Length: 84
Image 1 (cartoon, helix red, strand yellow):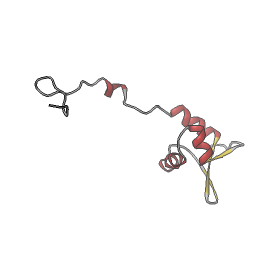
Image 2 (image 1 turned 90 degrees about the vertical axis):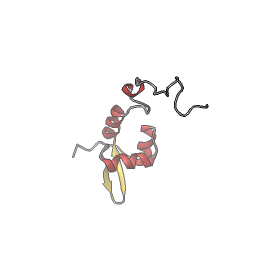
Image 3 (image 1 turned 135 degrees about the vertical axis):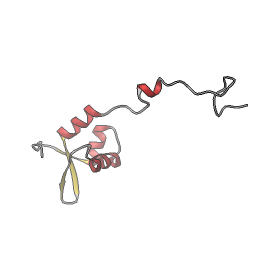
Image 4 (image 1 turned 30 degrees about the vertical axis):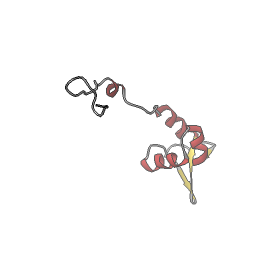
């Protein structure tokens, strides 16, 4: 376990710092994506764990490789699912 920082954040506070919902922070904790400390029934996140999560955080959206893939079209040059 890493050394404890002086300040521990609640999941709600961590969510505000990471610009996500408290439910997303709990999900990250459950998946092991962010470290937490359990005290009684509550979980707390260290400043270091929040900073590490910030460094790893990427913006949502397609990966650059997926964005480069061509659009599949039907014969005749019309896109699938378009109006006839």
